[in-house]
Image (cartoon, rainbow, N blue to C red; front, top):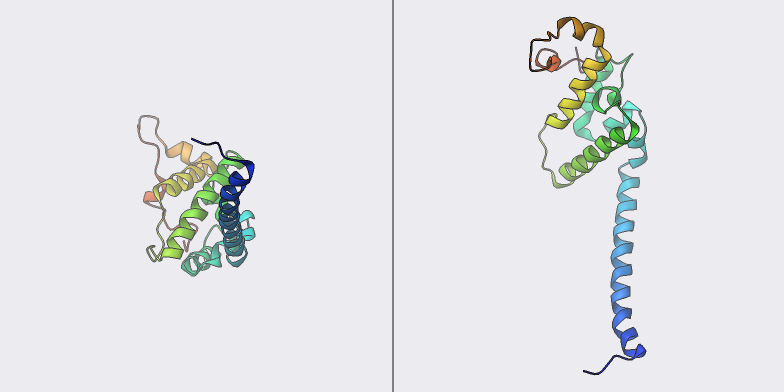
Length: 159
């Protein structure tokens, strides 16, 4: 088996480098275009209007703007963790990816439904913000924590 010369290695590596550069450029270009087109920077804020960028969220946003929490809580106050900034942006990232995939493929339920992960986050935030009230009614003998959303699922959205 003859060893390759530097020139023959360059002939093999050059097309591979062009293919890799093209793939990298396509990914960065498509990602950048999608980020700008979808107003991705708005999702890095706490502005509730960002949630209405997608048509499926407009009714939810309108309901929030008429709801009981509009003066005291925005979308992120209920739907992202308060524990730390990493957890907050991890949930926003997961949701952003899932929403992008669902809306791009058209595979989503309308009206939109909350996932179990997001329901858990919202429930935790209910109990955190309303700790004085929930402490009085969350009996210590219960193994299951109080589920505010069983009775108050529309709070924040038209109630």
